[in-house]
Amino acid sequence: MGYTLDEEQLRALQPDLVLTQELCAVCAVSYAEVQAARVLDVGTRVVSLEPTTLEDVFGSIELVGKLTGRTAQATELVGSLRARVAAVRARITEQTPRPRVWVCEWPGAFLYPSDPETLC
Image 1 (cartoon, rainbow, N blue to C red):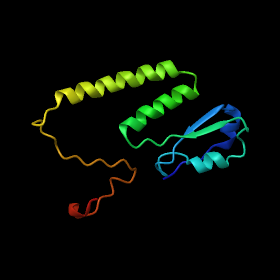
Image 2: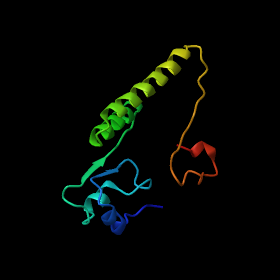
Image 3: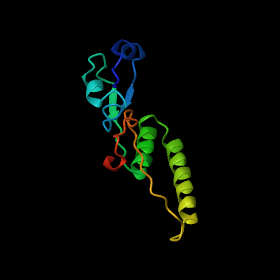
Image 4: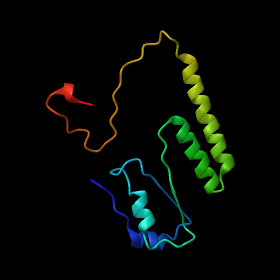
């Protein structure tokens, strides 16, 4: 499973800014494919967002705010999100039970081996 870039649609849109990512080859059109698109005007800015931590996500929100002229809104949103995280952290104590959780974000994640012990 993968995505392809619709160059005709991209040409029609004439974007000033294209946001993409390089974290996952099966989750979206790749940064390399966007860069290789010959239909992009020289003035089109291509930015790859690659957050791997919550702080990186906040930084990406701030970057997109800056790139789109919405710095104040991005700063407000990040402040709100940080306050929510702080509120959750304040409710957690050392005695709070913490379940073990495995998360797999991948389209083929439902293809499990017959032996559950062989999972990651």
